[in-house]
Image (cartoon, rainbow, N blue to C red; front, side, top):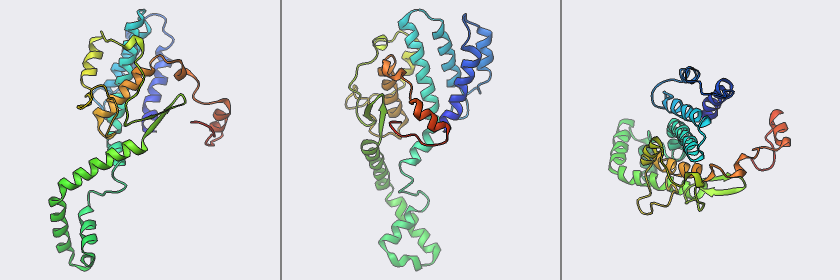
Length: 254
């Protein structure tokens, strides 16, 4: 909801204001971009300004490869913006349900020494802090293992009838028009996305809470599906759309 509330609105505004242009209108594009907050995310919308500028440039670019790279670059810039905004929620969502930073030392003390619940509170807090500091390396490793396990075992993505594990590579080639990059801005942005240390060709994210790993996966996913016809199908059937309008969760694949 946090993503669609912002980006969905801006896409609708962009299409309403600039989607009808048949010739490039630099002043009109500038007016649209002035409606976006300057600066980096999560508070600024600088990535969105760049993305919609590239979408607009692509609209009036006739060379297929150049146009595809502009569209892909814009998609990535949208992706970076939304993933940076969601980073706190994604990171905490993978560990907070089972580990509380504030009182895990107290809980550990209580599990080791059940009678500590009756001790003087200042004494309990001092001992809990000592446990928390001493065992911090263990806790850090435990959280990393937890994120790896959640990513590998529980996180999947369904696209056009196919199921992908976010922790595994995508065994499909990129779109032919995105096989090689010539756009300087796209090359620079791709250089900021880390490769897997042990296997550079593996785009899977072992830890979905890691922004770099997440963008590596998303970036390749966008590259694969850039022109595949199945992603241009309507996401919902007529029956599902009617159910949604009635406020009902529709049946079937969502």
